[in-house]
Length: 451
Ligand code: FES
Ligand code: FE
Image 1 (cartoon, helix red, strand yellow):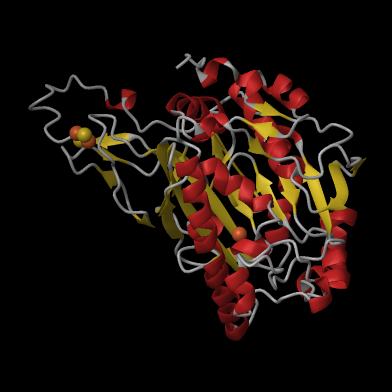
Image 2 (cartoon, rainbow, N blue to C red):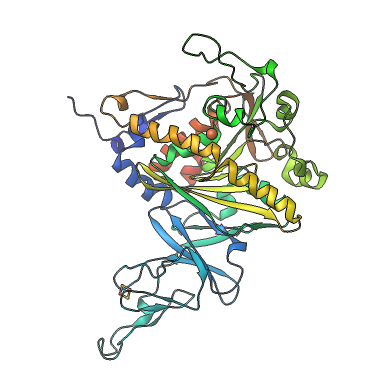
């Protein structure tokens, strides 16, 4: 057996925008995972929660930031702060609840107590055991470097040199969040749905853009009517049964156009073009977005998005007013978190219908994501093998065929179903791992003119 150089020492070879091939080692290698935590999750702006989840002073929400967990806390003056959920004494979590309301955080180990602002305000036996020599001001909870909100979505970064949040999001990331915010007076539905999949987090991200799999993976969802099946004349005999017969699979129309946006820092959007979906596949339009005022605010191209925006590295926005975090816990364990949103001004019936649909597509009770999860787990397991990982992962669909149009801050392609957005995300991922300056990173993730 020849020694293969460590993956972290051959970043150039791991992803190719030209061949559409990815090195499978990246889905199981512990050193790659550690580098992701440091150079991606340790620097990027990461979504924490929505403003409406912590409306009152003392409200808190625990959120993941890479390998750390932070407490996002509404302050007495209405502002929001976030700090690591680890006691400055000996590391215990200062809060065991996922969300709630407190006056302060008392560590359950020795009782050190921290104010809403993270300052250490109480140490049991301070005079007796420490002889008053402990300077409390030196041991607050560790704060994130920057915290900001965009239209109620709270983000933070551990990097004090990171560009402002709006610049980081760019037109692509902002459009994704606008697609929730523009629906009405939006608030987060109480509670976050969480579950664990034995998969590498990157599989859960690249699937966001994948419109090649639904007709096979989600055949059962088509068959029970969860997804409206396109008309019969769009059936394409691409898949064969074991007798060689064409499977009666409701394939997405081959002339269904994808609207693919690729953005700086690795943000992307991919999925059917809204107009094409309405005309070609005959599915219902998203009524809310046809309001003239919404179309005006989403911009000329924003109204065309019927697919999935993704904010690098791991925040996905759905067309169903949901937002999902893909939370890496180890190379082969990923938590999936689902935040659902509703319009405060909609009727109880409308809210119930919206929640019903949000629960039944994705999340622990979501038919689609449970089907997806089976594939992700097997892809993770089977690409780990000594020989199996030598085979390249393929993202070649549509390679080299699409011109990029750059307008209104967006770089987009109109093309049949393709794998451009997946490949773009892996390209950006590789550039993040190199740990360049923010200026260099932006430069290296400016979309090309052709994919
Ligand atoms: Fe928190 Fe000791 S670890 S008080
Ligand atoms: Fe799926």
